[in-house]
Length: 193
Image (cartoon, rainbow, N blue to C red; front, side, top):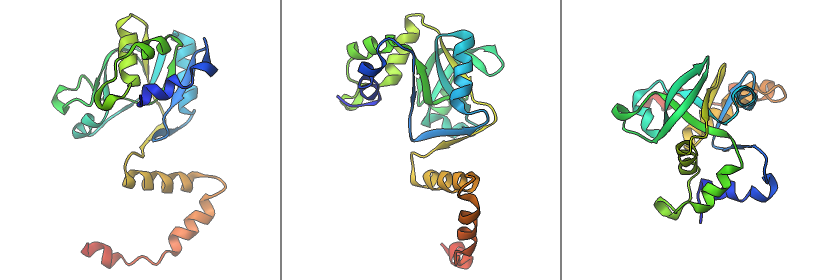
């Protein structure tokens, strides 16, 4: 078996009965305070499971994400009723996308072990979270504040993320900016493409 759920199951011997965090490497957020710190605060205040979330401004992009149907709790915290995976834009329950980071209870392991493989024969963490919600376990969305979301699942967005993060890195920004400025770019050739 493969899939995001299988990756989480592989960690069970280390996690045992503790709450734990999962963060995917192809979706991340640069924020102040850091995303995981904001999520931990939500967990400490409300308990339950916590998923990081961002607002998707372009309606056409909603079909690229798991979009949460939520009830407001307080500030940037929402209780998740369910998550619609990659909905058509006109069928999305909100514009709040659940992205790339989770604080989960060890209960998720039993759900993952019992889960039937989905498309492609894969075990999906999103399906296990849906089952966790169906059991009544509270799952919260933490809309990340003061941050920039990066989806590096395609080449262009990956390159944009690398450049932006390098320009913010205290040890790299000066030399990297000088490198970029020294590139012999022929903008007239770019305009013809």
